[in-house]
Image 1: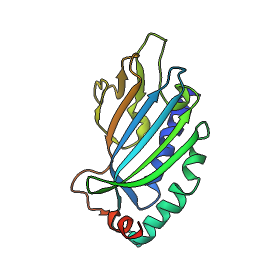
Image 2: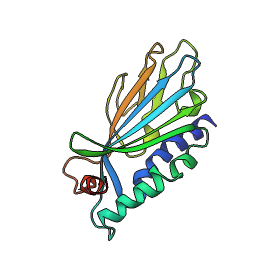
Image 3: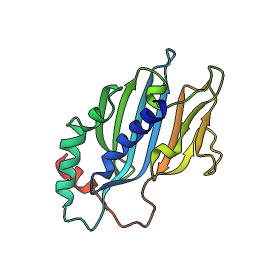
Image 4: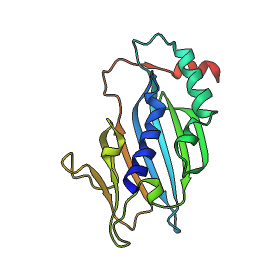
Length: 181
């Protein structure tokens, strides 16, 4: 059950960019662990883009992003154990970014494992699909053991992944965001 729920959580987060034509350069996952072991997860999508080759336009891709994910309930439905969703689009460092935050009732529901109360926090990188580990404020042994470990005294766990490699042809949606805003 734990393994299945963890996979659902991160696969659902991936759905934002697997829906045909949208992607991003990087994702940042920030788990804020509260004293009662509830968790706020914030996922930041950095440099939201349209992949080429689709017949969809940048305007319609942006409209889909806003209607279905920012203003719609697609993200909410994909995280049945989460509550208190907050979603936004914004410009940062010259690229379009998105952010989704949500609250979970416990570590397990948020996809964080801890084998005993004195053990480290752990998040499996294999649950992130094709995303590639980039950085974290924890320890990452590498592809042979694709798990990020954090000291159990930390209350904020961060991991950044690469989604699109530099040089992959994609088109930023920042200009559409600026026009609409």
